[in-house]
Length: 437
Image (cartoon, rainbow, N blue to C red; front, top):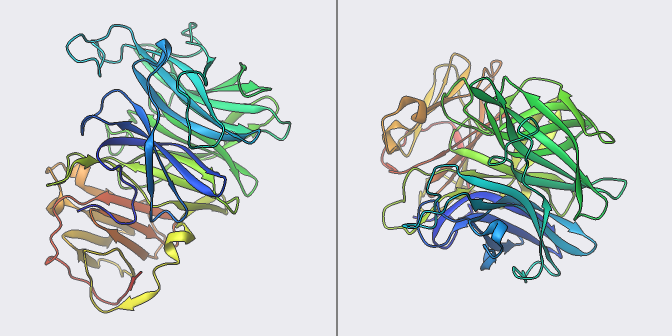
């Protein structure tokens, strides 16, 4: 039941990918991890390395609570290859009041004290949680600047001037609710950060998690996971991407276009980008799961890594060549026990069914309906639609035990979903080509 080319932890809970980096000839994957149960609890950073994103070497937990300021959790963050060492930035969590009956959750929901911290590793394999941790951004005390409990998920990068820059997600009050925002910080040494600038928008949710800023083909993009979007599929929270204007000197940011979802299957959340060994912008996202699969002891997985490219102002996604180039054999049959790639083109009002998942081209939209293989009957959870496709519906459908990723029109849109109760016999396809590894 475990996927073969999607990353999963050996057991128990995972959520956000963290600290993604190519370091000393290997890809390092860190991840939010509760090592004691299949539900969320005190966050640690799990750790694995890979060279091909198909075989993973699982390593001991890298970051764990060890300081007063991070005693209740090592929340999400990122990695920087700096001065020949691996710098791991994370949000340090301390509860206002610990629950004496269960220390892995606060006594009062969201009773968090959040600061930003750093652990420096010499080699990416050894992590001194006692002596190599440093607090780099203290708790925010000015509510007009940001939230003391909900400022988190540092993403860092090295500027051409040699300075280290950090973007954080946060929120600020607006009447009875909040506006989502990002905060920018700058450091000359990667350890002492000063506030630089901010960007606030009242129209996109009320808290921005996992922000990520990067440039593609001369255009900057902000990737983030806004909570409580007031729109389809309300009231869910989803990962989004938006073109922005960004001044590297002042860290001034403004909108330069419309927001869109990175993935139109709403299990996808909290992605992080990084540069691969060929300096190509690559993204990896968490696939949220509603329940543990039968007979398993793990929950949560990551998408396949995807290359990002920009054409005519739009970001395309394509499966990373390390995986995509392994699907070289054609076959006439589908084996659901092994990963496969199916390429097909749907005509108007055409529907195919793959293991109980209905994939339709209706009203110039791709509609993916997983009701038959889901864990509930909620239409907003089970029926996912892309925006209009302008008269063309070419599909690359990747299936791997328990997960499906559909790339539409060369990755113009993507729809990914968790499959809980596969129905192999409910497969009806035609005019397609199937590839195996």
